[in-house]
Amino acid sequence: RKRSTSARKTLVLNELPINTGQTTDDRRFLNVILQHHPILGRLDDQERNDVISRMRKQPVAAEEVVVTEGTPATKYFLVHAGVFQVYMNGQSVRLLRPGQTFGEKDVMFGIPRFETVTCMQAGSVWEVDKELFNRCREVLQVRGEARVLELLATINLFQRLTPSERQMLASASIMQEFNNAEHIIREGDTPVAMHIILAGKVNVQDSMGEKRPTGKGSVL
Image (cartoon, rainbow, N blue to C red; front, side, top):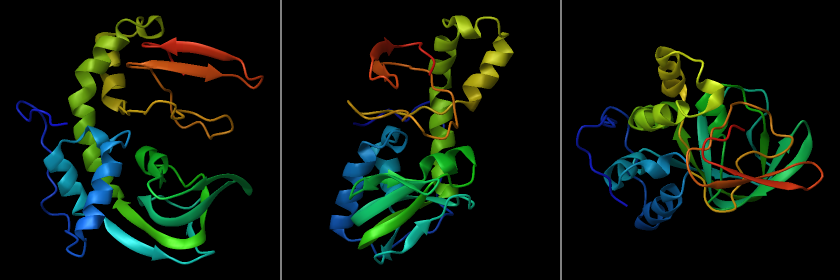
C-alpha cells in the first residue's frame, strides 16, 4: 500500500551504491518479501524499490557458514534459495528456507551475532548492509514516534516518567509489524529488547503450554 510523503522524514540513499545486476524476477521476489517484513514493510513503494536496488545476492555453498555466533554484525540476510540451519549455543533451533530472514536483531541493536547460520543445501542469500538497514529504521522510527508517545502515556508502567523521559523512550523505540501467527519472542531466545504491543492481539504461551491472550499496551 502507498503512504503519503508529505510532512515526514525522507529516506535518502543517493550515495549508497546501486546493484545493477538484478533481474526482473529478483526484484519481484524481493518486493513480495519486503512488503511483509516487520520493519521494511512500512516503507512506501518507491522507498522499497530504492532499498532493493542496493541489495546484493551472494551464492552460498553447502556446509558454508554464513554468520558465526559472537562475531560483529555488519549486515542482515534474506534467503533466496537453499536451506539453512540455525544454531544457538551449539544446538540446532530451526531451519530457514526461501523468503525467510536472519540477522536483523543483531544489526538493529548493535550486538554480536547470537546465532550461527550454516547452509545445508546450496543456495543464495540477499545481503542488506548495516548502513542501509539503519537508515530505513531511523526514518521509520521518526515517523512512528508520535504514535508511541501517545501509547506510553496510557500505560501504568510509564506514567511516572516525565514527558521528556517518555520522549527519550519513544525516540529509542523501533516499530515492527508481525503477520498473523508469527512469533514475536521464542522461549530460549537471547533477550535483546522490551516489547510493547501497539496494536493487534497476542497470545503469550508459558512453558506448560498455557496461553494467555493480551493486546494493545501490554509489555512483553
